[in-house]
Image (cartoon, rainbow, N blue to C red; front, side):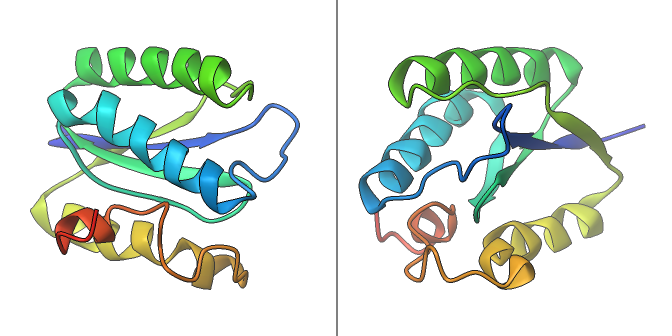
Length: 128
């Protein structure tokens, strides 16, 4: 039994998802727009892939993935491959994913988003 799911998404050609500040802000806006009504509680994008963490069932995940792929394709002109989907086991797992999603740049050893524009930490702190 899962309380939610972590979605790991990337471009079909493994390119950097949002290489500029404007694209990082746009991608963050897309994630918030489609995730708000679907249980999105954290997200983070570092370089070639992103993490979106949602509470809810597979029906919600299916809608989120569909809308993410369509909207990113349309607004960022970026084709996403079929994402990896992992179960969130419990609240402790969900809690650890918040930190993990926000620290993707550090985890990957890149400094592409020093102000965490493409993470949900800005929203949790009221900075967006």
